Amino acid sequence: MSGRIPVIAGNWKMFKTNSEAGAYVAELLPLVADADSVEIIICPPFTSLAEVRRETEGSRVRVAAQNVHFEPEGAFTGEISLGMLREIGISDVILGHSERRQYFCENDADLARKVSAALGAGIRPILCVGESDQERESGRTGEKLGSQLRGGLASIDGGQLAGMIVAYEPIWAIGTGKTATPQIAQETISFIRGTLAQQFGAEAAASVRILYGGSVKPGNISELMTEPDIDGALVGGACLSATDFAQIVKFG
Ligand code: PGA
Image 1 (cartoon, protein in one colour):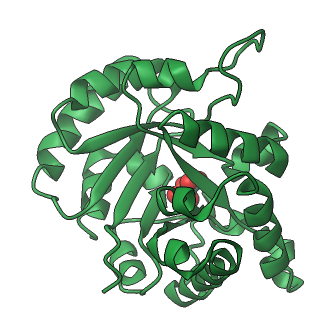
Image 2 (cartoon, protein in one colour):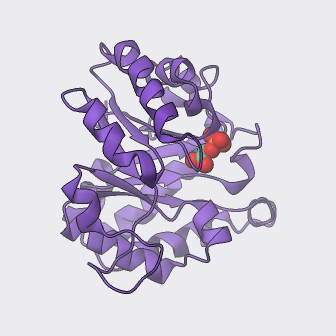
């Protein structure tokens, strides 16, 4: 037993209006009320964060943002600060999702600033890393993950790493229905843990939770969760249904 508490996080991406968010939370909470050995996180769009946070008050469900800016405030049109998230009770933030890297040009240097600013503000980062199809096929997975980890975690120490979450999300498995086999996910996450051990020491690497993400569904979560290094899942499409998400929280 690793002693690491499993985490199931649902990334809503750009789905659900505020009223749809309210209906979802009302449906979800009773379904996961007895799932007390798993940490549950939902990640709505900015417009619903405050509402979802209010509605989950007193429950075990944590609420995360999908992005944040690293500066405390300023002339950054369209951006949201850590202080704004903190004031409404947001505890976690997804950083470096492959869609942000691909469509919004986020790079590892931006992410290093976001990770350390979030930790400094008391908001836990969920840093996403992952390789593309071509990178895997040409044997460059390790190189890509190594550079994302070194870059994105450049400004923190081992104690801080232990308190955050890393998500391994192979780009070829996101929204494609093509899940990494449990063996590939385990092998790659074990590689990530080894890389973190070199960077931050064995103790920090053994404490950090590392999630798998990419086409996770009620039907494949249980076999993923039997792997020793997989500490949970970051779920996209399947989390949009409260019943499917609740099933994933209970490992199918
Ligand atoms: P998916 O997305 O579950 O729809 O593949 C995962 C993610 O992008 O976090």
